[in-house]
Each structure stands twice: as structure tokens, then as C-alpha cells.
Image (cartoon, rainbow, N blue to C red):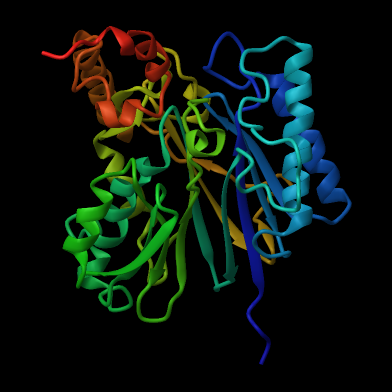
Length: 375
């Protein structure tokens, strides 16, 4: 019997520079990445790829057979981001190389600034994949989404009526402050899970497995830039890979949480609560108050070690949020954003003091420290 084919999906992102502030990756930088990955495919390092942007983040989607955390794949991403950052510097773009926090590459891009989500799978008869990429928010922005998809029966009908899903799912939750992790199974430990992930600035869902057979279902990036750099250098802008169908949530169940918007931390200077807005690739630009935070979703099929493609070899990618079905969420996002901006720099529009410790506010307050007197 032939062994199932193992294929790796790598989604690696980096803020390498933006046109006119922090809002979009300009075409010359996308072309640098396109050229680098096209060459890597021709040389057989990767089997297929797709280059896109989420706001001002350059996103590299690569499918290959080298496994997770492969030094060659991570070197390819690192070199590509370096080349794009150099192009950004030559154009004097804003924030050139912003996420490239460390200079020495030692075989793994994790911990150097760019965000990484990787998933090695044994290919099924059909493997639909959805990838999400967000801008102007943090890794915890996916907590609500992943809970809805894999634990909430009011969102995902399959948790009730699909015999392959009724046993539930297991969630790996990271404490990003203490560098610890815990595994929780739903539905049995749903309340414990909510007790943690309801604080998305600290507890972040990193992986999800189907409980009955440990089939990997979802992987998110968990980079905390402020903890790497020791100061605020921009938001984490997470990415996420989700498998769909055949005993897993349907694509429609994966997307239905975005029938409405929900609130995430980030937005302007990483210091505010904001509604997240699902948008098409052409609308993936963060403008109003550097936002609202945007999220894109791409759907594709993985088969025979690569992204399914057309007769000319171009990957078949569906821009899932390019659909009027998400107009309600977009309208809500604008309405809620307007309400929050009326609050100005008053909580709850601005993050709490504990969260603001990881922004630039402490630098502003430091000069007042010696002026406080006992009451």
C-alpha cells in the first residue's frame, strides 16, 4: 500500500516597507518576492507558491515537501525579505525592513521578526485549504475565529451532525509572556479554554488537532514583536492556515464568523481596540487611523505536493472575501470604528495601561515620573 504523501504548507510574512506610511506593499516589492520564489520553484526547492499582501505585510505562501522549519525554506524566505527590504530602502519607503529585527540567520526564521505558520500534512483524497493573513493586529486576533470554527456548535454545524467531528478538537494554547503551552480538549474543557483565550494579548491558540485521530487542522503564527525587540516596533500581523472539509469544518463554516466583525487589539500605533474588517486582496490596505485592521482569506487545493493550478501552471487561488456576503461585516467595522474614534485617547478605545506597556507610551510618561508627589 502506497504511503500517504506528506506535503508542507508554509505561510511566512514580513513588513519590509510600505508606500506612504503603513498601508500597503507596493508593486516593486511584490515583484522582488515573485522573482525570488519563481526561481526557487524552477530550481526545485519549492513546488508552488503565491505572493500577496495583507496591508503593509508581504506574504509568501509556499508548498513543498521539505517539512516544517526546514532551513532551506526559511533561508529562502529570509533572503527574499532582505532583498525586498533593500528595494524598499532604495525607494525610501516607510518602515523598510521593519520586521527584520535580528541580523544573523541561523537556519530558522522564527524569533527573528517575520511571522511563520507551517503545517505538514498527509494528503487526503482532496485537501481544501484556507489561509488568513491580518494586518494591524496581534496573534491573539485569531482566538475568537479558531474557537468559533472548532469549538462552537452554534457556528459549526459539523460539531453536531458530522460523526467525524462530534468527538471534538484539541487546542494548543501558548502563554506568550511565560513561554509555556497547554493542551485543552473541547467540548470537555471548553470553559477552561475560554478562561485563557479570552485574554488574547497573553494566551494565543497556536495549533488545533482533531481529537479522535490527532489530524492537524490549523496552525497560526505566534510572533510577539515587542517581546523579541524589547520595545514596540509594530503589531504582529498574524497568519493562519486551516484545513477544510472531509471530517473537518466546511469552508463555509470557516468563513461564517466573518458574517459580523469582532474586536481585536492593534490599529493605530498598536495601542487601540478596533473592529477587524474582512476584505478582498484589492482592498487590503490600511488607511483610516492605519486601519481598520484588515484580514484577507485565500482558498485553494493542495494535491501532489503543490497548489492546484490551471493549464498554464498558474495557481488556482480564490479570493474568498471578494464577495458581497461580507458587506455586513465591513459596514459594521466602519460603524464601530467611527464610534471608537469618537472616544479619542480615552479607554476603552485605547488599550489598558498593562497592554500599553508594550507600546511607545512608557517613553512619553517617563519624563513625568519624578514629578509625582505623595498625596
